[in-house]
Each structure stands twice: as C-alpha cells, then as structure tokens.
Image 1 (spheres, rainbow, N blue to C red):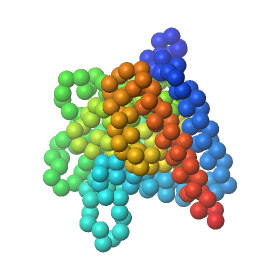
Image 2 (image 1 turned 180 degrees about the vertical axis):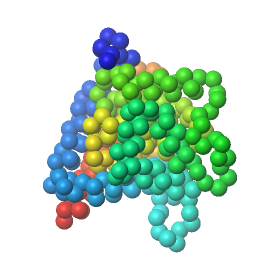
Image 3 (image 1 turned 45 degrees about the vertical axis):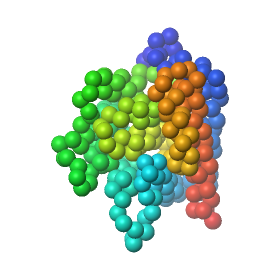
Image 4 (image 1 turned 60 degrees about the horizontal axis):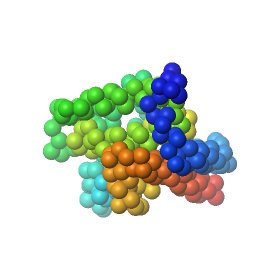
Amino acid sequence: MNSPADDPLAPLVALPGVAEAADAARSALATVHRHPANRRGWPTTAAESVLRGARASAGVEGASVRLDVDAETDEVLAGALRVAGELTGESLDRAVGVWTRSPLQELAHLHLLAASGPGVVPTRLGRPRSDAGVAERLQGLAELVTGGTRVPAPVLAAVVLGELSGLRPFGSADGIVARAAFRLVVVSTGLDPHCLGVPEVTFYRDPQAHREALDGFVGGTEDGVATWILHCCSALENGAREATSIADAAGA
C-alpha cells in the first residue's frame, strides 16, 4: 500500500479547505446512518435514494426526470434507471465486489446498462474510445481505486467523478456512468456503505456550478482542482441531508 510520500493524490488533501470538507461529508453521512429509520429499514430508504439519484443524474444531462406512466420514454432517464438497478440490493453487493477488484470491468458493465437503447451500436457498448491516452488514464484510475491511494474517500470519489466526467471514455452516457462510479466509491470505501446519500441532487439543482467546477478540475490548476473537490464534498454533505428527509418520511 502506498505511503504518503508516493501517494499520487496525497497533495490534494493539503489544498485549502479539502481536509475539512472531506471530514464534514464523512460526518454528515455517518449521522444519517444512525437515523432510527435507517437502523433496520435502510434497504427501503436506500432504494429511494438510488431512485432519486437516478432521476437527478438524468436531469444533469438535460433529460426528463418524470416517471409518470403517461410521459414519453426518455432514453437517458431509462438508462439511468437501469444503472440504478445495479446500485440496489444484491446487485449492489456484486457491483461493489467487481468494482474493488476490476473497476474497468464494472465501468464497462455500467456503460452497457446506461447506453443501451434505440440507435446504439451494440459493439460499442462497454468499449472505451480508442483515442490516444484514454486507455492509459482509465488504467491509472483503476490503480487508484484498487489501492493506489490512501486519501479520504470523499477526495477519491471526487477524483473518480472528475476524471470520468472530463475524459468521457465511452463517448455516450458518460455522465450517468461517472456518477454511478462516484456512488460505488463512497459505498466500497465505507463512506456510505448502505448507499443512503443522494449527492446527485446538488449537481442537478445547479448544473452551471457543476459544469464550471468540472472545467476547473479538467484545467488542472490547484484552485480548479480544489474547487471541484469542495463541490463534490458539498454534494455528499447535501446528499446526506436529502437522505435524512427520506428517512424522516420513512419513519413518520
């Protein structure tokens, strides 16, 4: 396991406000796991969290978030809901197991779920773009996920989301895949083991701030990267508040 001296992400924790924001996100999620409704009833609240997250994730892409039977089928929302099925119950256990051993395999599976639909070339599903550098960056990300860093989970989650969102490795449904991977990081690291938080609502409610923060991360400046990590930590903290509202309703 890497020491702080050779951990490639260690410098990120020293960026202004990052350590404090990561602690705040962790504390908020720990608190919601102690909510009375989540002590035994967490499978129900987790299912609602994943559903809300799927709708918000589709909304980030500009898609419909309506689930009414009379609404026209939105392929982006349909893909997000298929991915949501991967993040619920026994499917989540399987996904976390694959993610922690072979994250690129799980990313391919998530893309198959997210991008399937009319007009999609089946042979492209789950296959990253062949552009120069894509495979190398995905491999580097996989190494981080499988033990290449010891930074706090919120920081790793932010890097995974930023890398996948900026790289757009598949060329379709990349945002849906990236936000699902974000969830897999927070579950697999024990930050949100029951998948109760709904971080996607922050990205959906202020898409301009989300895009600007992502641009900063992609730009690679210290300020830009710090702003992105703080943005993701805030989403985790706000997602815990959303989870609290779900638990409150379940316990009413």
